[in-house]
Image 1 (cartoon, rainbow, N blue to C red):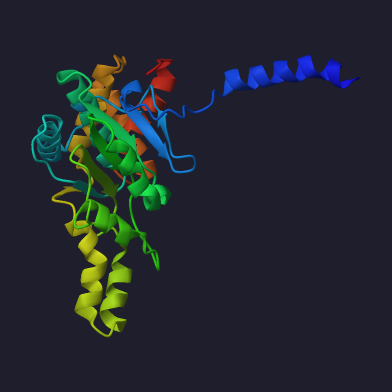
Image 2: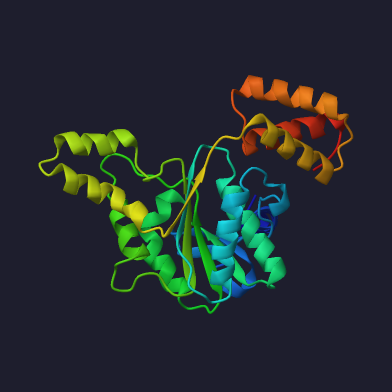
Length: 284
């Protein structure tokens, strides 16, 4: 087979591959969508048409945190002063779900007022580059990092400190930074205690390590829920998705599910609902 014979075949294969995996847009047009993921390689903002989230009304047991973060985010969307926020606490308790749900809620109340830009933990060193791009838009941007933490000799946190507060430029007026973490100070307790026991100036060393969390004006703690709240989560999902099951049977199955998982949380509740919907042959 000659080169001329192969060319049409190769072109068809290339066309098929592009349809299966269309190339990421290189325009970085913030007007193109309401949610993006940042890729430092190529300095690209990938538009996300369908964000993985639940409705704000379905988040139970975190009413206090919801009210505070919603007020802070609404102020930001309206061009008023607002704080960077650190949502810390037990895993699966609704930290990242709350950020995404509030973004959706506000964009319904104030048409497309906010852009949600997710930056992964490993992309933090490229944060100044991302902020340079976001400075060029008039849209209000919630910069979101899920599961943010630092270990060992990782010095990335120092660059993040300068960006959040205290650097010459600081963060742009149209950008706010929300992060979730299982750690209140974004670093393991053992790391802080090691600094306290081995450093020449223990207090100074510890201050250096924990001062990053001080850059967040808003701290919101999340904790595992009790059984009453867990049942409220389950029943809220059942009503929202119109799943037909008797309450007694529902609670019995939900209790058994938590025993096999060893915890009660929003994540556990959602995993149970997916299991239940599958059993009932219902799509969510």
